Image 1 (tube, helix red, strand yellow):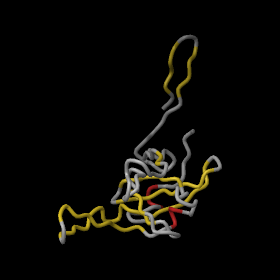
Image 2 (tube, rainbow, N blue to C red; image 1 turned 180 degrees about the vertical axis):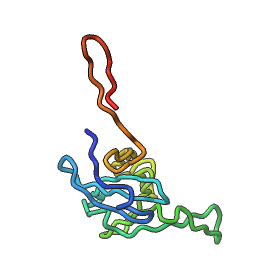
Image 3 (cartoon, rainbow, N blue to C red; image 1 turned 60 degrees about the vertical axis):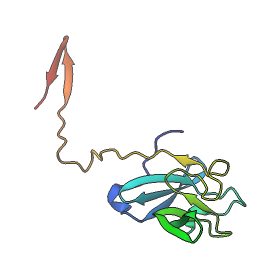
Image 4 (cartoon, rainbow, N blue to C red; image 1 turned 30 degrees about the vertical axis):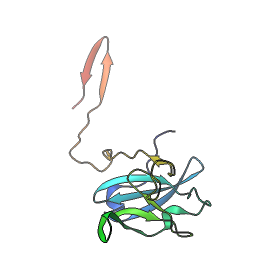
Length: 134
């Protein structure tokens, strides 16, 4: 899989998502508290558009009648049958060792067209000498 520019950082603020089509795959890009994640937009249960589901946290319990709300904003819920998946890993909440959705690497790279702090100069080679043109 190649590298594909899918958005500028400012176009996807924290808590937002964008669904893109890349190499014939629908992929959801999520900004969770300033960190970007990507998941295949297909629920493994019945192929629902997973990344269109609600994003929230989930409950956990280490003993009876004790509950804790965790991973706020990190869980996507399938819009068809409410299966929950961790956006940061692709693992399902109910069976993380067996059921998952494909997660993709996302990187943030400088936008050299808009970064005024990066100044470039043309360089040529003339008769074996490297020449900087300022």
